[in-house]
Amino acid sequence: MKQLTILDGGMGRELRRLGAPFSQPLWSAQALIESPQHVQLAHQHFIDAGAEVIIANSYACVPFHLGEDLYQSDGAKLASQAAQIAKRVASQADHPVLVAGAIPPAFGSYRPDLFQPQRAKEIFTTLFEAQDSEVDIWIAETISSLEEFHAIQLVLSRTSKPCYYAFSLQDTLTDSAVLRSGQSVSDAALQVCQSEGQGIFFNCSIPEVMSQAICDVKQVMDKMGTEIEIGVYANNFAPIGNQHQANESMQTMRELSPQDYLNYCQQWYRLGATTIGGCCGIGPEHIQALSDWKKRFSTT
Image 1 (tube, rainbow, N blue to C red):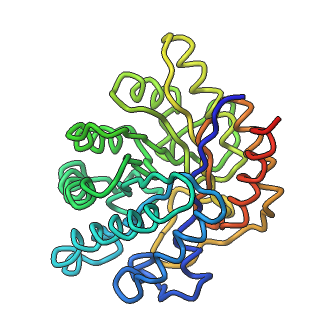
Image 2: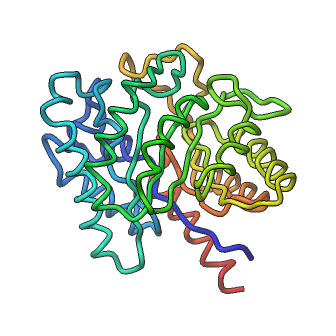
């Protein structure tokens, strides 16, 4: 069997479930500011569930969530704090746990139409410099377009640490998977393969669209005669449209049970994904089911 690495789940919803300070527009950054012990506890819950990689809680350390004034005064400090908390919790785990630095969307999730290349590079650079000394690997999250990928890849080219690029997909079933921008997953896979990235991931999209994305990546790798890691961490949201306003309301949740989500994970694994976890709304109970399954097939 192929080696499976288990990612953590959705930090924001876990913080909210734990009773951490949590509101729009600060989102998961509010706990960093007001109650960092809740961030530590959320990481611990995912590690206890079996996560082997935890992602620093720096997703909301951008002007879109903090506001320009708070970002300028505290954005880098908060991102650094997020990485330090993750590193501290990981170092105390009873099994090996890697810490991933996060590069989030600079202008809100799922909105490639709002992307500003030069300003994005400045924000990505700030987040990179704030976290790099504390993390083991990098995951750029919820990438919605190839233009966004290019800007992030330029910043991450400064590190020798493994870099993984997680793209968000349109929440509609099609014969070929597409990014939020409408650009093809095949083109994204080609460009990641041609870069120095260690893997292409797909995150913060509904589970139903992930399998086609994996198949499209595998086709590109077969044609190129190369291989990179494929990862998936879906959300527990209802489908999201192109005009989603992330700071205006809480996204509608579905009711995916741990077994429901595990069924998807098993399919992704069979298709070739070797790093699997969860995004928004996927909690420790879902990661526990995935971890328990890994233990069963690892001993057979």
